[in-house]
Image (cartoon, rainbow, N blue to C red; front, side, top):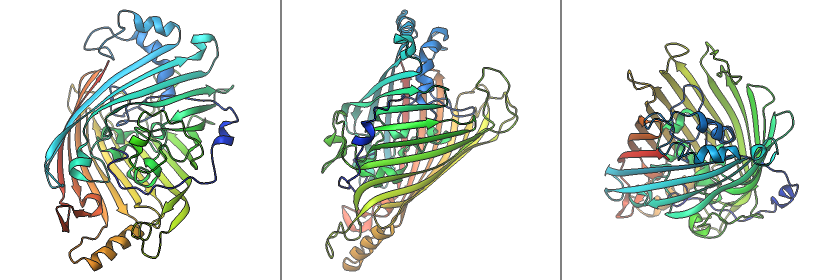
Length: 491
């Protein structure tokens, strides 16, 4: 759960706004993610498993559905072509998606209490290819939303910074994204304008999307440090995103978005409960990323495969113009609240296949790493690190199964540690704060292309970096073991 489970430093609106930027009338892009060669097989893109670019999948969905297998256990979605409805809509450039993710997770040790929780997420989306719809080439329109149900284990039992599940959120029915994307003449630049969720395109790790913990999607650092957790599931912000692909190997992404997806005091998801707060004037979030891909599969329709191992390397930054409280004085009031204008982070992401028996083998091993840093004087988390390994097709005949092992690390900023140390000095036995670490082992089992089961185990060391147990403030919350089972069905 991105917003209600984690303590965060909310900033007030700054002088930089998006009004002038959006008044230029630039327009853009898409929902869902595609996976590169050797990546885990996913029944559909979701907030919990994002990797790739949405517009490519959205634009081709109608054509793919017409040629897809029709057998129940071979087709890509449970309802098939829906009695000819999908092919009929495809003639007019329309495609729609519906997916249900349900999971049950429980902590068997540690935490503030033992027990389990059910969480469910229904995702729905509608896309339009404007060339097929009314003759405008290069345009894609997208609208998507959620029906979120159940309760969140992390909020109720764990109190962790790195939420146990990427779909944890307040129960609600809400709009998620609403945007238009236009590819410019030449095909190497496209622009997207509208309500967007940055976890669909920025900071993504292809292999990390295998895992259930939220930090392997939208990293714990922006989730905790940005106002409202940033424009990521289940929230989004108005903005403009530009993407350029000067060569097949290089992609450059840049965007400017409203700096707070849910301004105000309180739970951001309740402040923007329907997802229809189209805010401007709450500061600006500027983000940029450059991607370098090696040994990628051919995109020209040929069957030629590279002998090298495919990989993608990314370097990026974000800057938010709001004000951010100092955790050492802004929360305690010692000497008066202190805040800082602006906040920023630099990050790097690497995905690399490291082994496969042959170029046409379904079996492969991939590794990933993501490192993100931010100033320790205005952020609860000043360093976030993810790393892991996945094995695709671990058993003979199970070509689309994936097994994975990963670690997530959230280091508490220096000023937040100072605040905890000051509390400990006045309260004997009060725990200090350092870092939270989670280990996750998972297995995805594909029953059919449209149905997937996932078994999961997570272990948390020093939840929230070592915060006091509310039932006994002289000791920290105990380390936690969490078991989970998820099912995903694409309709």
